[in-house]
Image 1 (tube, rainbow, N blue to C red):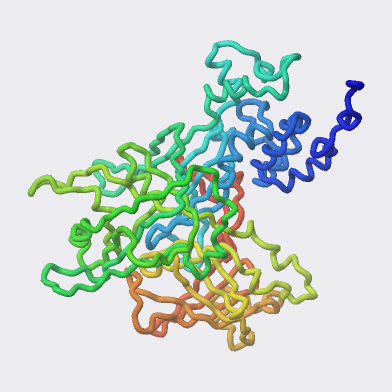
Image 2 (spheres, rainbow, N blue to C red; image 1 turned 180 degrees about the vertical axis):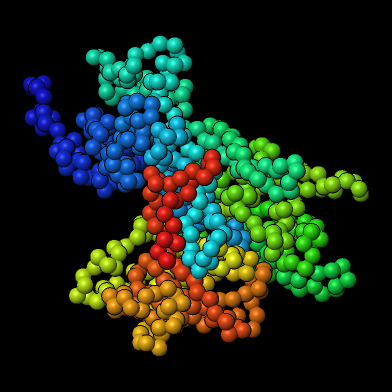
Length: 570
């Protein structure tokens, strides 16, 4: 019997026989983990592990189409290293995350640091959206400031760190894998370097208020950085944290005090299917969070703000109204500035609501002494991944003039918006279109002490009202030019209802306002709110836009501010 090789073994078969261009197309439909598994099935496929076109396609899913943001340490970065060292684990964080922080809520945005050469590091930054109070026109929303709170820093390539640590080494990657007899399938030397030199570090940033000795008001902030190799972002599969409000805190003489109200759940069940983006769950260790219990501090908080509603945290009791979803939480740094970090991520409005988070860390150590601060777990909020359309839609002026400007539907209004709420300032909303009811609903992602995050702010039915000269006075108040024939031709007017409440989200009789809604552009809504006393105010709402990092200014360290404001459209 001849021992010659079987003809069937002379040519690749099965997966290894796939042409490379077909392999690339297959990989375009797989996750990063699935691609690694596929390319690990045999030696012939493993030869493509470092094929840049495969990893470039994976990076493009995170809107990285070139490596200009990753050349701070030279040009040795590849799509392969950017994906495997950064995006595979942390890419799902990119985008907006909404917090269940009581009343105010909070929005956290992760993005690629495109300005790496200016800031001196590269990777992913997490920033909290903070809105300044309007200085002039309270009817117009303003764009947020972005407060840096966490960095996921991609360190210099391992060969650079190896050369630096070992005191020698060539200036390029041949020290690891470029020798003539190097087996491209042997990654042992790279794994060895990677184990010695981590690829990322994490920095938590606290914005700490400084006081002048001769002034009771804070006059500036200082930035406190805490860097660690341990990931402070935890993936929470479930938590039992409840939020409760005493609208009328009982005195010691009351035998039958009112039962505290359960604060609205978040994300709200009614729109959780529209808000929650299950595709953006990071590949972290899954954890179950313990609930904080501030019940013993309710009396102290009430004494600090007598007559105000009292908010406190405690384990949730009863049937959980929250949808089943994953959250992330960012741990406070183990420093004396942990409270400042927590308040950046989970802001409080203590002027209207007594908050036990302000008092839970203090104990009275003597009758005549001031309270002394003690260590305690800090609440930074549970954030869920927010699904939202990217950027503004096509401006109505650029649409077909023959359509009369009516080539958009109410469904096109869906997405993340910014709205003006008079003295409360700008808030973030999610606008939902209910097809069955033919109705638009605006739900709060951030809120205030009266109408908090997680509840509906206003709604209107899709039935259009006539646009005629009888509305000219109203349109003028809304600053809509009635002499602009093109604009009035595309103007739509609707009738709606707005939600009103007292501090603590106390709903009373007549807790709604009549609304007149005017829309001439699917990226802008103007509403007249008619109050109970017969007066009215105008509020504007604008779709949350894409950011232009290159045009942003830096009013102080750690804060970025968009240069163009919505006020420019007035």
